[in-house]
Structures are given as structure tokens and as C-alpha cells.
Image (cartoon, rainbow, N blue to C red; front, side):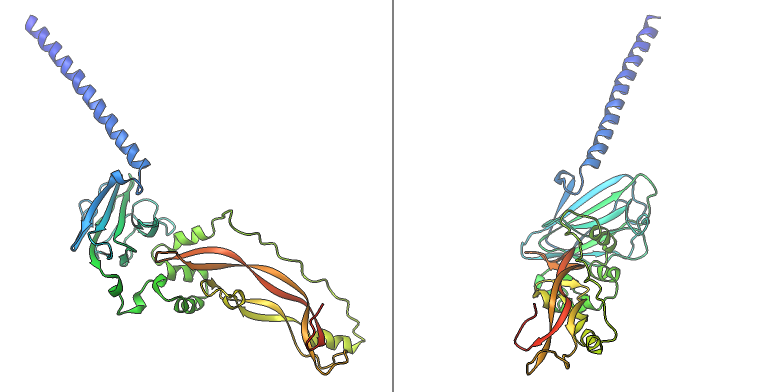
Length: 345
């Protein structure tokens, strides 16, 4: 009987120790999960540093089979040499959870440029294989996220290799990223697009939806959009033909002007590149002034603000800074015929 009692006591103590250990393990699991959510691509303790000197690859766990749920994995590739770039090529076998409203919200893999924190692209689904990505320096960061629902297959596999900057895709200008084109060539390319969506898709093919969202997100830097009042209506005496001639011979008319030329900004690209403004036009054949030659000049000039897309090269790194901005252009509200050499009032 005494022996049976000792066995029961020993079993109870062992169960208590096991329960304490299980509770501790569970607590650690929750703590790790919480840390994983708080930390992200910016926290180096969750990065796996990979020194790159030759070709290699990284992939989602269990590739090419279904990857685990509820994961955040980060790799930072660092080339041994400083003056080289890292090129990423996605394996043809690619499949993650589908996007929602064309935005990768749940499971995705994204590539970040560590030098300035720019997200080069975020991908999910299985419709198309992401294109090649090239770092701006000798480092690049890759982040894989899966939520707690609906894992997919086969996941992803990314092959990486070292490339020299001067030879990267140099033989085929058509595959150069837009930000690598000379500014004049890029300006010509931008001008050809008829919609903002098509333009952003061209500039950022892998993350254009995110760029559109960021572009229209209100910020305090945006200028006011107060347009000046239109000129007052003029009462015209239709019996006076000379007044009619004056009104229709030298009047404000629609002119198309190049924003870059108007602002003398050759370091910046605008879309649309041209805007309609009111400028004085027409002849002064029936000039009332006693002079040898009359000319049509503005007698009332105002500035109006036009909201356009502005593209500027980033300082020190490859890429384009995109923002909505106001440009002020002169509009001629009223015009008069004056003797050549004189200006309007």
C-alpha cells in the first residue's frame, strides 16, 4: 500500500513538471509569434545574412510543395565586392495565395533596396512569374510573408548572381528599367502614354497598384488648388462692328504649351507634358492707335495652378521620385492692340 502511494505521488509531481514545461513552451511560442509580428523587414535579428560571391538561390520552405502558414522570413544578400550589383531571377515555378483587388495583402514575397528602403516589387498569386530585379548597390533584401490561412504551392525560388553595373542589360536598351534611361529618352517615352494608369504600370510594372495608391494619398505637402477667378463677362454692343472685330481679332485663345519649356525644368519630367493655357492671339489689322504697326499683347495676366504628375531622379541612387504637384502657368485674361515696342497695361 505504501509503495502504491509513493507511485501516485511521483506521477503527480512528474505531471506538474510536464504541465509547467508545456505552459512555458506555449508562452515562448506566443512570445516568438508576437515578436515576429512586431519585427519585420527592418529588424536585423530576423534576417538571414547571405554572403554572395557566386550564383545561388533561396526559396520558400518546402519548395516546390505547399509552404507553411504564419511565417515571416527575411534574407539579406550581401555581395563580397562593393562595386557590383545583385540580380534576382525568379524560377518559372511560382505560386502564392492570390491577391485581393489586385493587391498582395496576405501571402507575398517582396524585394527591397536596403540603401533607401524602396520596395522594388511585391508579388503573389500564380498568374505571371515576376521579372528580373537588380539591386542599386551590393545588397538586396527579400521578405516572405504567409498568413494563417490558405497556403499555396509551389511557393517561390529565387536565383541570384553577381553582375557588373556597366554591363547589366547594356546590350538591350529596351529591357532597361525606365529609371535607367537618359532623362530625354524617358521624357519621350512618358509623353506617349494616354492614361496615368498605363504610365505608372510602365514605370513600376511589379508594384504599380501600390504606387497609384501612394500617389493619391493626401499629404500635407500638397499645395492648394485655388484657381483664380475667370475674367468678368463683357457687355458687347453688336451694332459696333469695330468692337466685334476687336474682340475676335486680338483675344485670349487656347494654346498648348510644354511644361518643361515654360518652367525651364530640364531636370524634371511632367505628365501630361503639355497643358492648355489662354494666350493672346490674332491680328490687329484695325488698330485704333496712330502707329506704323500694332501688336496683340496681354493687358491682364494671371497665374493658374495645374495639378500634374512630377517625375524626378532620386539623388545618388537609381530610381524616380513620383509625386503630384502644382505648376503655375501664366494665362492671358484680356488682350489689347498696342503699338509695337509698347506693352499693355
